Amino acid sequence: MVSKRAVKSGKAEIVGSSLGGGGTDAVTGGARGFGRAARSIALPLAVALGLVLGGPAVGSADAVSACTGRLAKTVPFKTGKLHVYKNRSYACAMAVAKKPGPRRSMSVTIQARGGSPVTDRGKYTKQAGPVTVHALNRCVRASARISGGSASTGWILC
Image (cartoon, helix red, strand yellow):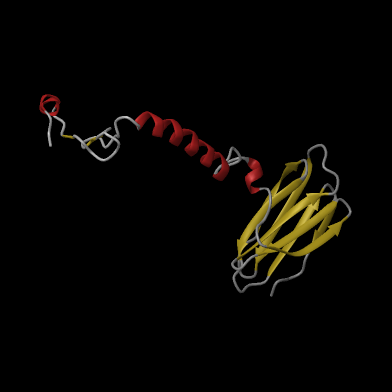
C-alpha cells in the first residue's frame, strides 16, 4: 500500500506492518520507531566487538614480538638466549637478551637448507627478531649475537 505522502516524496512506503505499527521505509530499509534505539545499541556493540577482536594492539610492535608454533630449541649463551620455534610449514628464531637495558648490537639469523639466510640486525634493548623462513620438510640452522656473546645451532629440525 502506497500513501499519498510517498507519492509526493518519490519513496514507496509500507503502511501497517507487523512491527508494532512503526512501519518500514521500503527504499532505505530503516525501521521507523525503533531505528534510533537499534542504532544506539548497535554502534557501541560494534565498537566493543572491534576492541575485543582487533584491539588497539593491531599494528603495534608488540603484535609481532614472538614466534608462533612450538619451541623446538633454546640455546643459552653468555649475554642471552637463542630461541627456535617450528610450526608445520615455518621455522622462526629470536635472540633475547639476558638483561634488557640500553640499546646494544644484536642480530639473529635463520636459514632453511637450500634457501637464503634471513637476518635481523640492529641496536635493540631486549630482542632481535623474530625472523621466519619456510621450512616444510627442510632442516634449518640459526645463530644469534648479542653484544659480544653468540650462539649457533647446527642443522636441526630435520
